[in-house]
Length: 339
Image 1 (tube, rainbow, N blue to C red):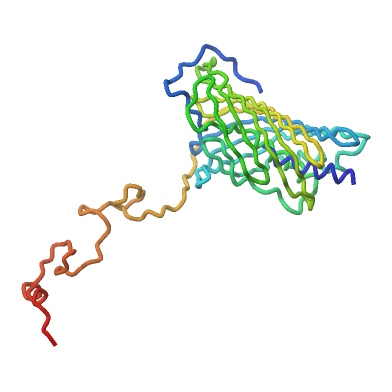
Image 2 (image 1 turned 30 degrees about the vertical axis):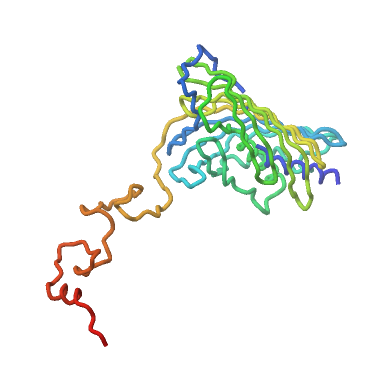
């Protein structure tokens, strides 16, 4: 029963969603309207990430501590959807370690560090918009061994926590923003503040953001209803002039009827080169070459618009080069004979 509680608590980790900043130099020159922060999601853009995460599950038997460290090769593909461009994240150099209470084997609780290396090369694809909102994260595979599910769940949670949720409007130093979340059984409010703006040694503008979130959660995991509260604190270094977060230090806390869980994520990113990719967008619904939103090879006719359906030159709405015959026009103008 105790091991089952540990496994259930570990299964929650994938549901969660920052440390070394570059040295900051002089204060950045800020436009009057403030600094706009958006991720650079140009097709073909690559990023190299490193995530070091720690999870502590508090149980009556003692604390369970799990550590996971891995690299991520991230690329913006040429595909897009209403949820944002499609990103491909490939995991590598995965290292795992677990400290269990009472000498319990880690594998017995569904976390086997030896399995971690078998997941090197795993790729996850998901959508993200320029504000850092993630969508369509793949579900964990069904029918896999518990150790695979547990580690993949933590890696998915780490990936979710590796991006900053950015303010919608430009901000100046000291500016604040907030955002509500209601999804996957979690309702929460996140508030943020632009703590400072500096120019680093590479001449890049770096915004230091502090965020705090609080909320409630209710989920069904393996037939059990898990209810509780969640809270989090994050510090983010966002390179606004280059469109990416160079570091994120995130601490999360979950208190529930199953177990109390603390999570820490130490994330760093470096911006890489752009690669050639095939651009693949949605099939557009606009087919009229004269429409302002049309994209394609057809040209708008000189007379403009789609070809008209009226072909009778005697019709009042007809537009064209043919003339209405005189006898047809006279007949049309004559009154109908009384019956």
